[in-house]
Image (cartoon, rainbow, N blue to C red; front, side, top):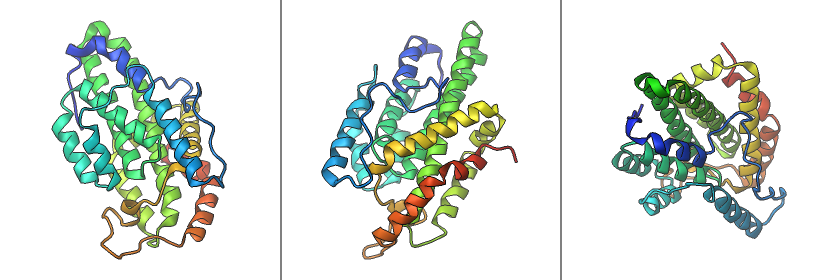
Length: 274
């Protein structure tokens, strides 16, 4: 897990938290002006306009700074090259301000239809920030109470987006020819974020319910913009030339619609104590 010092950036903290929409008292998708979700039969032009409106809405948050290497990130995402995104992150993310800028980009692309792997990356960035705030609370006695409270808010937001990442995988894996694609993805998520899921299971039931609603509502808002997820259906690798990893669209769309109706049931076990 990444860890950064907070001592030099305390004045920056409030702005960064606001920019990331990290207040999770209600734990819901922002409601102050997001565009209306298009109908299920919306055309490509309507979806494109909706995506542009969502991008404006997300990017107009106060203090919303993008990383200087955004064009490289956008190019890598367009190719579903998560390895390149990882390399760029390791190269540029060296402290909390740079993590904030990276997370801003991640939130933007997640809210405009990024695949399951990107939703997972965003949740992981938030979890890292929450853990860093918790560590800083121990190192900064004068700010310990405030930092600890902020750490809990950020970690809960990380859980909400991790649940959304699971929702994306559940729904979009219904496009995959390989029925094991979802199992492969979820096994990796359980191992990669074991601390996050343990924390999620420790939360009060009312908080768990709020975070589950967040994930469900975010799926409703973002699903129209999501496309086929080659990395998910390829079980962690991009398909080779000529390899078809997707089911016929009509069959996949029916399965996706049925799965989205069951999302609440499918997500709940991720936060329930075992």
